[in-house]
Image 1 (tube, rainbow, N blue to C red):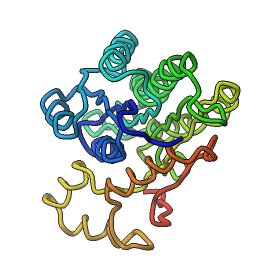
Image 2: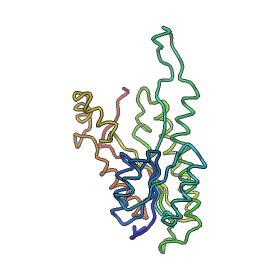
Image 3: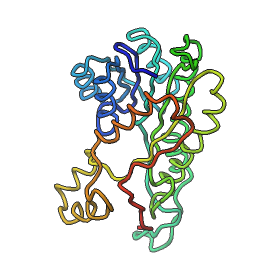
Image 4: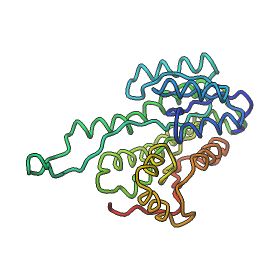
Length: 264
């Protein structure tokens, strides 16, 4: 799928981190990018900087996502590339020690359900709403392609660490969406893929650099090659390639410098 000038794209979580870099890269490729985020200030500023549009969208809320797509399509036209980076989750171990009570405690089911909604359900929500819009659009090329959807999983989907029972299993679920959805959408010419980033130099980890330089250095050294955290622009480069290359479909890509996460 050729990313032509003015082609509409949607990036969730586009106000910061991997989503921000993805929005920038798609805009650099000529796309008119709609940023979906709950961070109004940063989202609006970045959308303005890349010549796109910003829409306050809460991925946990069905109507908010529907409204976001409606507004983005009204402003930019039917999106042909959708990149889903936004997520919401919680943290905890299945069974952990409660210091105050001096006893073991169980991770509440409600916490797990929150993460499942913010990672797995939200991924299906964004992908399926986008796919419906693409399905009703005209094909773009002789292959009958109508669009590309890229979801963000994580290396935790395969190397889930202690304390990542919610995050790891739900990101694995995101990978599990890819092949059946790609097959269900094959006759409509809509491709579905996911990317599993390793540890990247996002605001979350940059804060760690300031708080504890020793831990930051250890993180960099833990990557086989190159011995550093990934840069958001490297993630974004893969996002553009996936959107552009029609033969990439139904695949989950690790982007991690060959890292394999230890148990803790």
